[in-house]
Image (cartoon, rainbow, N blue to C red; front, side, top):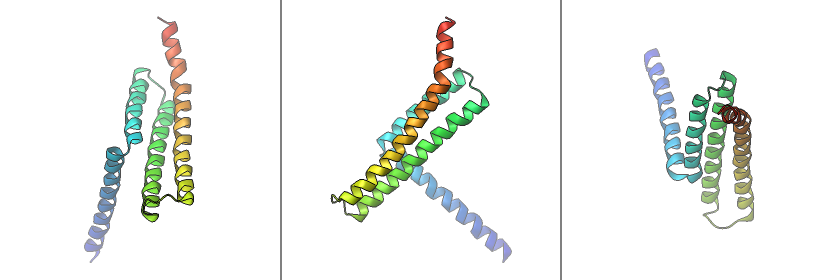
Length: 131
């Protein structure tokens, strides 16, 4: 009886991960902004490696990348749910909700950009001065 309960628990967790990875696939396949974030993330990770950023800087870079992707996923879910709820008809309340959700993504993207500038710009300027 205990083995079956443990097996069911493990299977449930594996199913949860499957659903989450399906969400990642949908986000990257269907959302143009998420595709842009993938490119920007690869550039940031490459620059971090190339410029030998500190462990704290790595934590900041990885955190803002994760936060931007998380917010984009939440925004996409809200947009899809809103479109479903109003049958894609124009509704001022739904538009307001979607605009606010998009603003949340914009805020996190701006913070990520600022963090990137704070971390990478001085290192790039030092590199230029040493040439």
